[in-house]
Image (cartoon, rainbow, N blue to C red; front, side, top):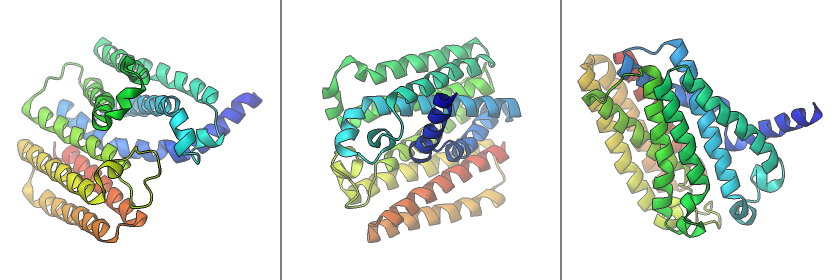
Length: 295
């Protein structure tokens, strides 16, 4: 019992920094709602609950895989992180990882064999990702390809969410646009996670700003954000949503998002960088809620 309590306490501290479950749960919710709306014209409580459990459990599994895979790297370059500093051990994380691994197929099974097969495929893919696809550590030198290959896991998760909402769904024009919308949203989140203000890049050579510089990274962020906005607008027109209620909201969100990008470009501070990231999160989440309400 004492071991269980200790592991629980250590994991609580760990997740606050590396995987804030409550915050991530709320951030996943808008995309889950819009996904249910476009493939099933609704988002029932059962679907939302299962999709949330699967999403949180699988991404926790992916996060823990990263901890094992990056252990030696973090010992050298990120000594402040929970595993590197000894707050939680890899042995404790392995136990939690097994709970997450079991939760993914069990929760998916409620939606039928199709969802279960995708869930198993995702776990197999994560196994290969943990093993560096048997290419060795040299694979990490190809920074962009390495991140792109690992990003596939998020795309599989989005397809699983669709299947949980509607096991017989097919890729209509609307769903294709929505899939591209969520895909670019995921790419932007993953990109921004590795965009740092000058002086906060560390020594690990594991951020986009290390390779691109802040100005080039912001330019790429602006391009992806513009594409994401256009996909949202296309989806709303495919739904034939009433223009009068969503256009003003969308314009306001876009102005705020680009404004924080411009402020960060001028100030180049950690606070302005975080503000920029927060503004995109609010815009993307709001877009998903608008899509959910429009269907």
